[in-house]
Each structure stands twice: as structure tokens, then as C-alpha cells.
Length: 232
Image: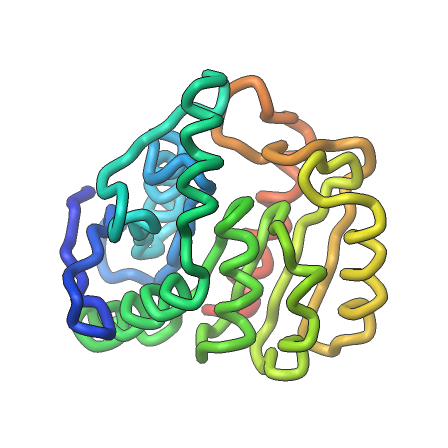
């Protein structure tokens, strides 16, 4: 069962539209699914529905709700890809963390689900890292997160488990940036990094030209095991 919920923002400046997929019966935990720069599109809804089929309450926030509410874009269409880059330039990550925190509160207080994890993709992968550093999220996973190499000064604040999936041929995260991430995080006791040799950004998309089936299945199986270990 799915629905769109309206979650009050922390600053009381509006309500965050959230796609919510509910499992049959009582959720065993909750997972926030933070989209790429393409909004809560069919691929992100499919990921939420999959988590619900595994017994989790899944919730995907509209990350661009302040300036482009309801946008759904297809990364395989060049004009929509360029539109998404424009939205990325407008996005405020600090407000994004606040929106994640508002959703954590809503899940725990209104939905009565105590354990909350987060999985994010691209921009959402960056937000997974920031959520691990700035909130009390119980566990986080980031797929091909961008700009994490520029935020390693926050790593010391990570108190709960974080897993990052890093494709080595990522067109948006250079080999140099990947090395900085490994140098800064490999020794962190709460952080696990997985490299995917030769794969590019977006390899775990639900469908479309970017998906690599073997890589996506491997990363997703690691993510499912990670949440089972840290949320259940």
C-alpha cells in the first residue's frame, strides 16, 4: 500500500511531500529513500515498494519541494538530465538534512517505528553521509554519493553505521576524490566502503540505460544485509 504524506518541516515553513510505501502488517523498521536529482520518479517509488515488500516502512521525500515540487525526471532523456542539474545547483544540503531529521521524527513519533535507516543515491548518497554525521539515524547507505570528499571534516561525528557504494568509473566522482574518501574513511570504525570496478554513476538505478544488473544486485544485497544487521 502506498500514499503521499505531508510531513511538517522543522522550520515550520511548509510540509514535505513524502511517498510512503507500507508493508503488510507491522513494519519491522523504516527506511528513508533519498532520491537522485531526478525526484521521486518511478525508479525511486519502485525502490520504496521493494523495501515495503521486505517488511519495512519506506519513505521517499520530495527533496526539491521548496522550489520544484513534484518534479519527476528521466535521466535517459538529455533535456531532463540538464533540468536536473539545474535543480542540483539550487539545492541547499543544510536544509536537506533538516528535512531528513523532520522525516525521522515523523516516522518515530507519528508512525511509531523506532528504528530508522536511510539509503540515498547520487545527491541522496551525499545526504546519506551528512545524515550519518548530523542526525541520529540508526544506519545509512549511500550509492555513488557526490562531494563526500569535501565533507570529511564531519566524519568524526558519525556514531552509527554507514556504508558507501563507490563505482570506480564514476563520471561525477573522480579517482582522486575516491582516494580522498578512502584515505579519510577506511579507518573509521563505523564506516564501510565498497568499490565496484569499472562501473559508473547510476549503476544501481531501478531501470534504464545506466543500470548494471550484476553490480546493482551485489550492492543491493549488501545493503539489505546491512540494514538487517543494524535495524532489526
